[in-house]
Image 1 (cartoon, rainbow, N blue to C red):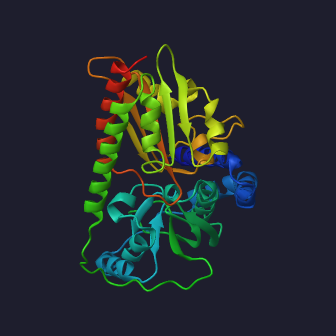
Image 2: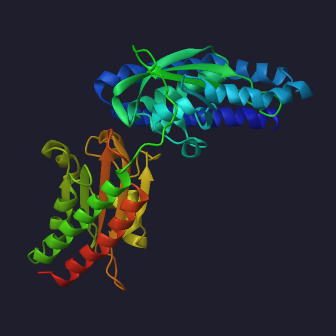
Image 3: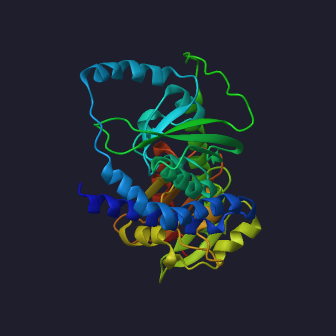
Length: 370
């Protein structure tokens, strides 16, 4: 990679972080100081550090590795995995390179799923921009730092993230960042070895899905003409999703039903034009369902009346969008479901059940039209 290419890559990374900070403007007022601190870091970086950093990097040669050092790698990996503290290695864009067993237990995210995904994506929306800026600054060599963040699965528990720069060696041309997580203001709980315990979770979830299908079937069979979509939305609200948004497609996209955790929150989307929601438009045109865990694009469901991204305002941790299309017929409508906060994300099994129910809803809309 040439010096010009590397500088251009760093500049592009800076632009992406700024865009992320802009999207965080709609966070609650109490979280704004963290976002502002991150913005100041970025301003200092572009004004005073970007070009000097580039000159220092080009002046330093690649570090060479030796055979004895390579022989130490298996031992270091074993030490890393057995550390009692949750530890992760991320790059300057917070993409997880590896995490130890304690980090898996602490975050509740499997190693195979987390690796290759941004660690910032597992945090609350209000913390993502700040964490990404601090990680980038640490990777640039601007010193170790720490900040409080919140995991999406446990938003009520503040987590202290401590970041420090590492230079892995000749095989890794860029700095990585070592991240240590621990409850803010609390001692780290002891990580006990895994034990095979009886687990009826899957059986319970399957029974709950069967109850949902039964309730949906009953609602559709007894729905008066013209009310099938609204009846279906009310069955799904609460027991299956925190938010249920229903849109019809005939003659054009129109908002039909919005059910939210509160009436005030529902009003935010009642007047929204579904044509401004990329997810809804895609489902209405192509008839393809979409399942997203920790959505990366905050604007995927458009913006509310204040201009804030809906997914950020609603603290969406997972979403499911399904078209309502009878066999061999055009799409009749689109259902979008949100889960937020600490609620478990939608699973593939739930998405499959929802896909089946969507066809039943579409048939009910067709056969029980007014």
